[in-house]
Length: 152
Image (cartoon, rainbow, N blue to C red):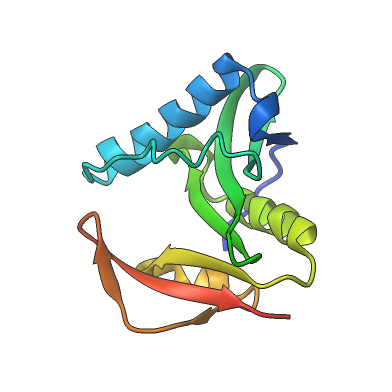
């Protein structure tokens, strides 16, 4: 993993506490990477961003408060947690930002089971946090994925 010192501030907000400007910048980053860069036309705004149990984590710098990297953490009906929409902007890659965000989310999850749908090419990254594949590879929005679970 390439890393370099580049200070960024970790932000965490409950869905109800997001400002419209924060939500706009989060959706902009997700759209830039998932829709434009990965050429995946899909419905990113799935209704889960504003659910009461959703938490948003992102990294930003003071000079430019838009997110450099982002993930959302959701509570599922079966009392597990779900990590999703993990994304790092092109200019911020290679600095360990996704790792920092996943660590922050898992700190909040504690000993509760957590699931995610990983793009297959980065399954090893999630494996480094104790996530293991659950089931066969599947295609979501034209991209191979693996369902993964971390049990404590």
